[in-house]
Length: 211
Image 1 (cartoon, helix red, strand yellow):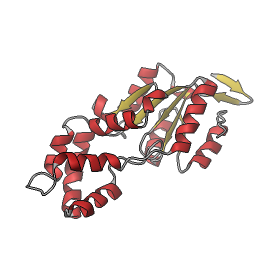
Image 2 (image 1 turned 180 degrees about the horizontal axis):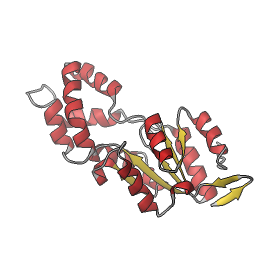
Image 3 (image 1 turned 45 degrees about the horizontal axis):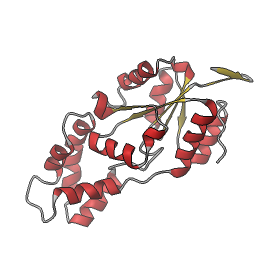
């Protein structure tokens, strides 16, 4: 950890995927769009989603099982693969933020780790589609470790995997609760609102990206 003025520059950057590097994978907006596209009852689908999605994100059921519970519990005029393709197509990159992380990794030799709540199939698709593993060193995703934020265990797992003390880390998330939890554990944290605000916050921790 390098001292810059009165600032100790972090050696490890943890961040979320949905809302930071990419759009949210399967959020309320995407589900409503799916309901409209396929003629589903949104309220019923959404209620079923909330009853089972945490289980999917925790890696305890597959995407097929999740979809059996929220969509394919009765006969449909469309097939499963068509619906999955639609789900995956809702993911889009935040190119500027991805560029920021790439630059910071190269410039400061940072260790980059993801801490995210996502289901396995969606996580694997998003990592592959947007080449996240080309700059992220490891993924502490809820589907892999069977623990979800806001459980502190998932943050501790990330620290253990990185073999780093909390005060040498900086955590970025668009959810203020998760930012607060990371801060309570001793990490420096940034509540991500947009790339410009996050860049300004990173500057205060001795990390400067020019894009």
